[in-house]
Structures are given as C-alpha cells and as structure tokens.
Length: 401
Image 1 (cartoon, rainbow, N blue to C red):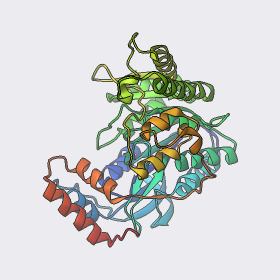
Image 2: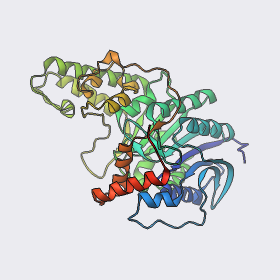
Image 3: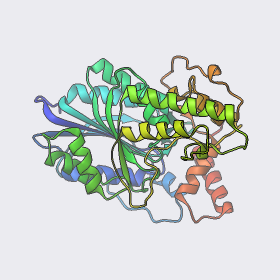
Image 4: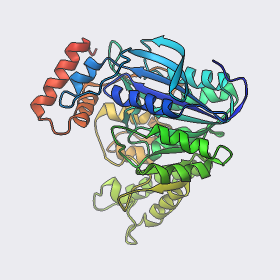
C-alpha cells in the first residue's frame, strides 16, 4: 500500500525488539495499531522481534505476556485502526545496522510523503556509545551514535526532506554529545528531538497517545505538538531544538571551560563540579555561559523530580581505552579540551580525528551485555546474573574475537 495523497504527517516508527525488549516492542505495535493512520496521518512501523525463548533466558524472573502472533524477524506495516497491512517481510535483518535505519527512512518518506515527518526510535540506549541493541545475529550488535546520526542525515539529504521531530524512546539521549551529533551539520536534517530525562521506563512511550496527539492537532506547529506531548504523556521528558550555531557555541564553551580549569586548577575537582556555579572559581563565568547556552536549546521539559538535569554531558574520567575510543568517534570530541579531561589527560584534542564513517553496526561487548542484564534484572544476585549471561551466550553460540 502506498500513500498517493500527501498527508499532513507521516510517523515512522523504528521499533527494535531484536533483543530482550521484544514484548515491549510488540506492545508498541499493538498500541500504534489501535489508533493507526487516518486522513491526515500515515503511521508506518518497522518492527524487529526476537524469539520469546531468548527473552525468557534474559528475563527469567517475570512471566512473559502471551501473543497469538509468534513470528520472528523484521517486518514493515502500514497501520490502520485495529488492523495492519504487511508491506514487507525483511527476514533476519540487523536492526542495529545503520543502513537498516537509513533504508527505512528513505523508503518511508518516498512511499508515504507528508508535509511533516516524525521519526520514533524505540529500543535500548547506551549513552554516548549508541542505541538499538540487536541480539538476532551471529554476535550482538549496537548502532553507534555517529553512525545513527549519519544514517538519518544521508537519508534526509538524499530524499530532500527533514525530520521535523525525532522521538528517542531510549534511555540516556539527553546528553550534549548526542544532541551535538545530530546538529553538527550546517543544515541539520532534524529540527527537534524529544526524549527522556536520563532513564525511561522499560515499557517505553504510550504510542497510542503519541499518535492521538499528532492527529488531534495536525495543523499545529511542531513546538505546539511538543508542548502537548510532554504535558499529556505524564513522563519525565525534555525536547531540544537542533540548532547548529548554538551547538557550536556550546562545544566551544565546554572546551574553553576545560582549558581554563587546566590552567588554574590547584585542587583536583571532578568534571561535574566544573559545571557548578561558584564565584571563587576562575572558570565560573565560563560555567555560567555554558549553562545559559545549554538552556537555550531546551524547547520544553517536565520532570516529576526537581531539580532535574535536562541536558547532561559525560563527566566521568576514564583510562579505559575502549571507552575513550568510542567517545573519540563523536563530533563533540574533536578539538575539544573536554575530551582531554575525560580521557584522564591522555588524549589531546588534536589527537581526536574522525575519518569518514563506515555505516556499519558496532559489536556489543560482553561488559555491555552484563549491564543490560543487570538493568532487566535489578533484584538478581551476582550469581544469577552470571548464570543468565552464560545461558544467553550458550543459547546464541556467541564467540567474541
């Protein structure tokens, strides 16, 4: 089925359940289908589903909901109220592959054009490393943040359109590194981002309510929609404007703040302390400037807990080379003294360079798998978590090189 008439909105949902979030992503599908498309709105979903036996291994302490559709793999649907039209069965596709996201955006906009576009990405987040974990392949994968950003940008540039609102239904996206990655281009392909304040709930956004709000005000501007969504969804959410000029000033501010600290420090401080206003600090003025610039990106935010850090930055130093290498891939890290501090003063700003990115997924480390097991099983003992990890590796026959 193809949209022959340009509607006011196309909502593209990239629901990655090729992992332990399969039950939640299937619920996403059912919620979105309960509203579906109408005369003003196209609702398109690409959903990945892992086998329930894998989910049971990773989440052994909770009963899994039943379903009368037990297919696995990746499919695309055009959603209408209480029914779905299968548009394509993509088989065992890697949802962590940035080319999968690129193809979905380009295909969706080409076949279902609209005046405005919302892109929703649902799945696990991994702070500055990336998101969209996939356990369906020969080894676990993650979509890197730079690769995700480039995939979106290329799909939009080649299609000659923008994403008016990117909704990140993932944890840890309200970081300046993530927002800068999307706004590093002179003409960003994304205008606004809506995401959680740090952690989101395991069950994710209520997609039926998101679609309802879009359909209630199809003629409204994006900022009006953002205000309405944040107020209606009853979650800790924040929305940002993707403004290249402001983001460049923020990056410059962080670099100058770090350089000033290096020049004047007498007592070792944590990086988080550098952002705290204190008139006795030589870098206090720079801290205030950075904070003001960061606030200027915020379109709207609402938190059940105050005060809330609506926009964060990585501020834990490390000597872990793997983490340093991941951070160094970010556009925010280049020519930035903040990177020098984060790397425990081992990686100078001029050592960070970004070659042309290969749009490929990243291999997810065993340590990252451990972290996700802990998130999904917060009450499990260390022995139980080790057992879950080993059962998962044996089930999937994963071997890291």
